[in-house]
Amino acid sequence: MAEIRLDVQSSLGTYPVVIDADVSGRLPPLFAGLGLGRDLVVVSCPPVWRVHGEIWRPLLGKTPAVLIPDGERAKTLQSVARIYDALVKCGADRSTTLVAFGGGIVGDVAGFAAATYLRGLRLVQVPTTLLAQVDSAIGGKVGVNLAAGKNLVGAFYPPALVACDPSLLGSLPRREFRAGLYEVVKYGVIASRSLFERVAASLPALFARDGDTLTALIAECCRIKANVVMEDEREGGVRRILNFGHTVGHALEAVTRYRRFRHGEAIAYGMMAASEIARARTVLAQADRDALWQAIAHLGPLPPVIDLKIADALAAIGHDKKVVAGTLHFVLPTSIGTTTIVNDVQSKELRAAMRAIGMR
Ligand code: GLY
Image (cartoon, rainbow, N blue to C red):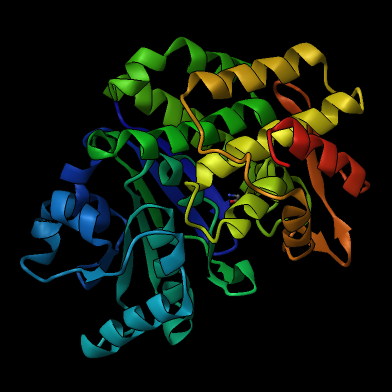
């Protein structure tokens, strides 16, 4: 399949998102074409660098990458400080381009370092997980967690380029891949019934990591995300729909101290909870609620929630950054393909929804 290229307008100019199963073999001309120069610092994590680090040889020679640990628990200011130290050591200046080569954590942490070092280095995102290719690499959200909560420190810092290579997903562990598919389901629910149906219809090809199937699917998600962030880069309105499933999802991650769930898995539960609230309010048809629960079930097992206390999750939601001036903005699906944002979801409804997903 030929390269798919989308142009995303942002506050820092227009940047391309290139989706192509060969793009990691064409990085030098791509970088040169965008005037990105050869003064690069690549940030990655050990498992990705071990398997795919070779693709940077034409641009870096034997220069090592800055490796930060993987996992939500490494999304910290300490990891950012490690990148700052490496930038100081190699004499980075404003002509340096920082490349985030990894999953969502690497993208967020390296992106925050790029946004803040010398008040901003050019940033390139080369995502290596499905979740990062369809979501976190696009739109400029970068940042880290604090002990008090997720993503509490960060910036909106659009990249200069996003290069998504579906062939890099071949080495992704199955669970990690599935976690990305939940995010694809999310795009279906918020914006496209046909995308939602396509996931279910293409599961064998997707799990076989078929290049064309993945390229088309990733491009569709990127298109949806690009349209949303072009309309509302700083999440003042419509961008909030991308947080579908995130209120309960983030709470589940927080109460399990980021150890139990992949982000996409927690979002899967969050989408189930949100659809249950929408069904109970009769803004979502029972059939659509069931279709979503079924789509999630078809992707495979989720970690258990039976031992998690609803009261703890409710307390965590109180800390969530989606509470703006004391108001919880909650994304509810109104069909497969449309949502509404409400700010009157009551604890009673959240409790019932969490019971429905199996918490106690
Ligand atoms: N992942 C949600 C957003 O980028 O807004």
